[in-house]
Length: 223
Image (cartoon, rainbow, N blue to C red; front, side, top):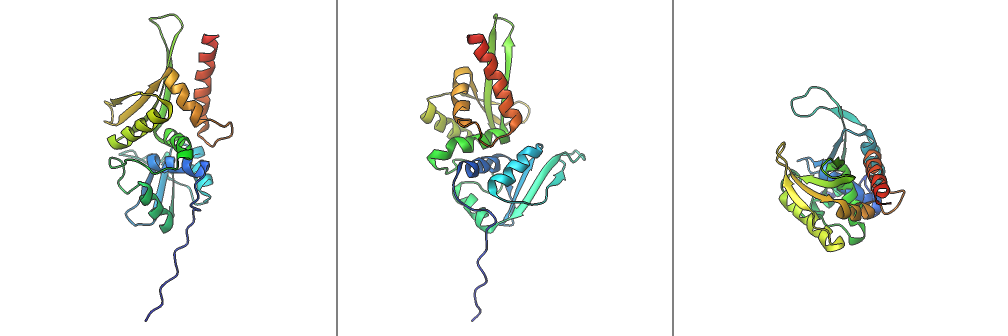
């Protein structure tokens, strides 16, 4: 009778925290589980995002470069690591291989939902603003989340309605057929207030600064 092999040792410490939930949000958007049953890939055009991903999971691995679609220019950063236990954990909470359209509810502890959402926003979210020339001092701004999965978008919308009472609206992008869950003005303020509840939360700096500039304009216009 042969002895069983050694149990796999995980690289990632699977303990829920604000940083860990943020990393799960990044994986739900820009991550990928390979068919191997053990490898996790993460791709981003922002080196800060790559560094944040490794920091929040407590890993250090080689950072590579890759191209996308038909382009030959390698302008995206990518990291890959093997961890069977973490891979199985991700599947258990709702993140699966080929997740782009099958993604649905992710099982996140209630206390860390907005940390997870901040990761989703940094991965596949956007924010923009403009002055409407039809009305004097009419400043409009929006925050949004994109996904190819209807179920995932509907789940986030439901969670935000239950927690904050915000409604938002869903549109379909003409460019890539992805769904966009969008919130404007006061609803957007309520969401970003919870996503950035603490001054030192880990996040993508350029997006947080963009939101800060928008809120500064809103504050000046209302004073």
